[in-house]
Length: 497
Image 1 (cartoon, one colour):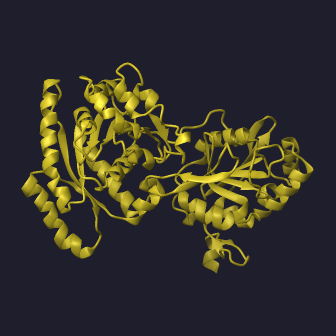
Image 2 (spheres, helix red, strand yellow):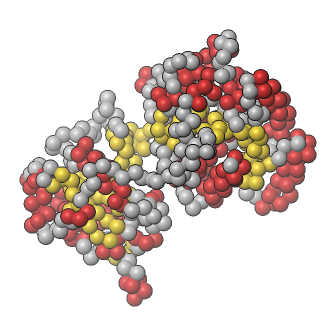
Image 3 (cartoon, rainbow, N blue to C red):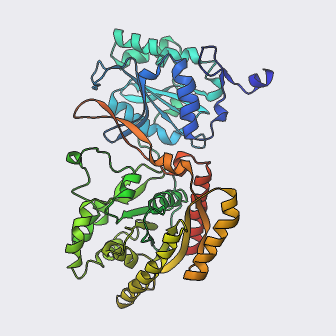
């Protein structure tokens, strides 16, 4: 026990709760949320699982935790609402200073009395003070157990519930802070403007935007998984990334979390998606159609697809310059993005051709199974046709980065005997080199795309769940899948440099 004390482990004696917690065991944001906030902090403050919701979207505001003094459904924001506080968790690697601006915005927008900001190592409570937002309590993660009484006096369930019964004035709340001798930290006042979450590497002037198509005419080979996670990995390398979904099935659009509706009557994409971009030479520029997504940090812009794209193919085929519209519109944003990734349909249709005509490079994802291998003949034929068209319009031939082995079993015998044979088949029979990276078939890749979030339905005032996918790198940064996509990003950057 002496060693535990030296490590400043947080001790708890409540039944069915963790015996201790060490904030320095948190390696990423997910563990700060689960180990610190869910397993320790909320129970220690008296909140039951019925009193809080995780991953809540309220309009344009997206919160890690929304905490109540009591559960009321349907829930509405009023001056008498039981909303107690909001909590934002960050990675231990990130300084909280860059996030205080956002917390200030959230507190003002929701008229909430307190906001908690923590990365496990640093713990802060913010509240309204003299028409501003200030840090009213701060300590290190190690100090939380020793100062739990102070923390509870501010944001404990019983204390907040009692405060709401006696006053709704933020001024009186600040007076309560003074009565409890909670120190205001003047040198850490909230900055007027939010600090950017990331400071990406700025591309040098001589480097131009690179466009990569991800294509195979065989479906089910991990094409969408490759697109979204490669995009996320490249964004973490400091690149400004744009993803274009050219598949009418819109799998990439779903995978980045742009489909937040479960009824076509509430379709928020139907009036502005990739079909509009391709159908008009003069209207619907990329800056208007692209949407910033939250499936990855830093964020990635995505041009969504829609099932209406299927109906547009015959009309676009009758327009002589339809194959050139995307090229023209990409030129308009060549200074805004470093890398564009185009997801394509698993077919030989117009949209596959548009993607390969616009792209500089091609990645062919494949599970290396017989039907996928046989499809490589069709892929090579399409590349030859596209290169003929590219020559006419003055573009260099499409550069093939290689076949990317995807959805590969982790079985040791398969890796030792079957996989090398399949890789040799691709190179010898079809004359296509394989990329160095291998993307394994892992459960994490499915779990990260199946995440959901709880939101308040503004029409019904009921809380509901909607898709909330994350890239595997944001979902589980230390996983094998995350490492594989990081390796893929580095390989791509090396090859297109």
